[in-house]
Image (cartoon, rainbow, N blue to C red):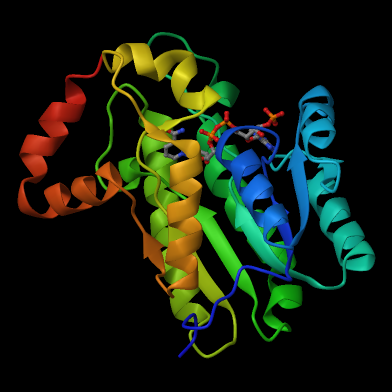
Length: 255
Ligand SMILES: NC(=O)c1ccc[n+]([C@@H]2O[C@H](COP(=O)([O-])OP(=O)(O)OC[C@H]3O[C@@H](n4cnc5c(N)ncnc54)[C@H](OP(=O)(O)O)[C@@H]3O)[C@@H](O)[C@H]2O)c1
């Protein structure tokens, strides 16, 4: 059965947004398992720092929100790394947005442009290549908020619900190919994204350690799971089914 023997070793893996947080921890653990790992990000200094920590890491500056740049990136990747068999669509941002208070229209949709459109475009560019591999793998990073929106982050919640829906469609369309499509829905996780602003808004609630999150993700992929919802992300999905009003009211209290 597809996914049942999914080994995360000996692969060539592209991680978008791999200079920090979950992407960087994926890079760390996947390099330690004997994979070749390439990461992208916008900030060269952050990638240089990652490279200094992990000298085997390949880093390429690229913004998933720049169509011309990702076209060039994917052409270059296929030429330089023809064994590329795994794409982890991880790059993402999350902001607090007060609706109706004058945010610039271009900025309003940044999470949709990066987290959702970036995922769909990177996938579209690399699908023909990944489908040719015997064990191709795409991992799309969504969120527990894909199942229940959090009103202070409307664009983020919309984008992650979109990643969830898109990933289900992609998996269904790839059903008769050798490609495995996995969704990783992290819970609150201790990364710069969470620690910067949201930790305070959530009364200092501790997120899952990023090392634990990535270990659970890798174990889930290797066990053949296609929707991995560690910790509270699973609770959010269940609550969205059995008590949708209650859980939405709870997330509406985060201000
Ligand atoms: N931490 C959590 O609690 C949590 C929970 C659920 C889901 N997630 C998801 O997990 C993923 C990783 O988040 P994180 O917590 O690890 O955040 P993080 O520490 O802020 O890391 C985000 C990474 O994405 C890169 N990035 C952002 N925009 C990009 C773009 N346009 N093009 C290319 N790279 C870009 C960043 O580098 P540059 O800024 O240099 O580009 C950085 O390497 C995101 O999709 C996030 O939504 C996180």
